[in-house]
Image (cartoon, rainbow, N blue to C red; front, top):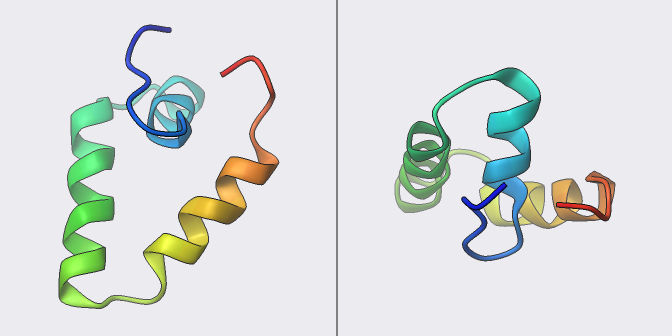
Length: 54
């Protein structure tokens, strides 16, 4: 896994669901800019839930 940028959440989700990591990152950024839900809080929760190897 070499796609880790910040905390590795998007790369972990990409590996887990076999999706493109760029698309997941764009989704998080768009949600943060447009104000859909609380993507920053969701990101931090996912960071706590992901395995330590990522």
